[in-house]
Figure 1 (spheres, rainbow, N blue to C red):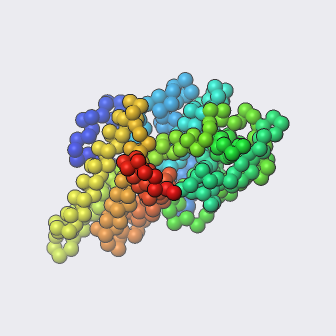
Figure 2: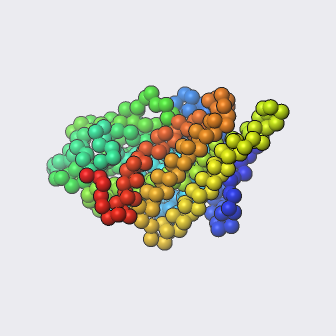
Figure 3: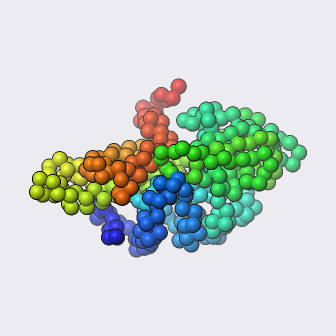
Length: 389
């Protein structure tokens, strides 16, 4: 198989440092060698390629932006984005696993945790000795997480937790869950360990999307959580939303990898597929599709790069992250569907990555905030008027 060379029509690489290019290339090589050869089988069988998790830890992609004192890489957000991009070129499920460990588990421990919690958990999460998940969404509360009914009550030495969470990536394989619940009416974060009595995480089956990813429910029935497992600096809905901003950032970059994968496959296929005595790449309608794909990839890359620079400078707004997530996920799904048209009937075969990416992107477009919710987030920012109520 020919190795992936990258898609960079505007020479964005000229803006990257040597270190950023080196890390990106190492992850690109890893995806080509370790993910591409096995991912279709895992997708078909609805299994996560768990054997690659220690290798991901060795590559330093778990907790990639957190300080080295906790066993993390201490890299910038450009590197984080490029890593997410390359991983999702392999599969959205792979990027989801790493994104959750980074943005939704290690980030809240680092941001809202005590010194003792950071020292205990972050090195183990960075080395993949421990796997985490993030419990916010509930069966009846998705786009409106503030309406959650999961609650904690103070008791001697800790808290009693009751409730349920839904659509939790990594839930069934996680050693610890960052769970958001109301304590005296205020949302707080709790570290719920897998062996706590009354806690279960059944895997959700029957998915047509993100099949190479573990998705679970989290169920809490009078679960005792000791005092030391409360995230002391967490308070209110803003805390989990800060985590979601990190995850949305990783999605904005990740879906560019999906776009690259289907564009590269479509271009190669169109140049080799002969109809009416010439390659279909020579027909105007096919060229129109390919040009649309490349243009949207380039726009998304430029959007992401500036977003990373804003994030590294501490000047990023959550609405800017919403814009990148909203636009890039929508265009990625549109491009995958367009690729399916170029491939014709062959597009549904798992010999090609097109249908797998298209199915995955159906989920990516709606999780971590639906397209509509991000529209309203940006709309409120530019008009000063909330349309949520």
